[in-house]
Image: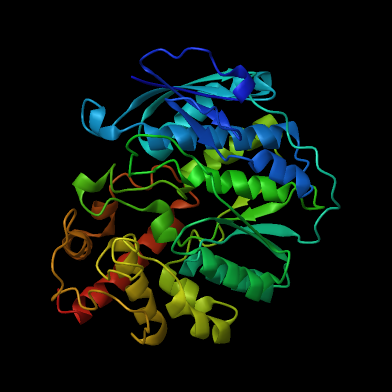
Length: 421
């Protein structure tokens, strides 16, 4: 059992039990065993004119608490080396509003991280910042990671005449790229770029399944600045990655993220609606492959200029900010370029050919993709997918099936071209 307390500095217990970890919001306790979340951010938001509703602000505090817990709770100490059992005490400004949604949130977190969560809501959070600022003139929010999908999402929104406010979660290797894309697409004042700022002493859990919650928190907070009654938050991710079906049976949990899974997004929407946070989460490309996104992008000249500069690699930092070329995101990227340009791709890859690439430590991603392609060819796409589409309604299921089938076909072309099949 992992026990974590997230609280304002004023409500931090004088003594912690041996089995407890603690984090303080926005101010450092300067105590051993107590970490800090987003130091000085509350005051910074106030100075910048933020005045979110209590519901929006408590969603931000909740998400940051989950991120802190996810980072400090090592999976290696659990019974099976992966699945954690977590008790999290979350300090909020208005905890009673969240109490009816406790079970729903616990289930949502289990979908996201694969762990067993027990949440306790307390009144140990901070009140929302009370800044004074006029509403911004953008009409929606779009997540901007520096990746190819989020670039296409921004290009399409601008081409459609929308005025997106871009939100980024700071990533050391992508921070400048995020700023460049936002400046190009939205101009000055159309970008917020934040970090969860979680700091503590001790080892960190590298799987970071909960990190995406900070991204959603930042997006909802940014949406509170718009002069729109119920702004849309666009989450630009291709449908193959959204569903992220296990390529082989052993990849069901640790290697299958649920960050943008439609089930997770629908659960998150229910919670936001239930507590009164007025935003609409939208997965605009949930029925499209990455190759289809590139082919159907509404601003082909800019995409031609920028696509190779974007980031997709799951091991980008490992290879000194260079795409590895052989992880699943890299293979989906290369397959999309092949579907778009016939293979013309100026991206630098450590392994530009799968057949001649050396197996890295960890999962053999090209072999997993090859097995998935062969299973689909020999036994049919439904045999490969298994129960992966059980989440979808009957009307939606054919569309999700189509995007996964098309995604496998794009990957087959790549593997065949590289001589792996």
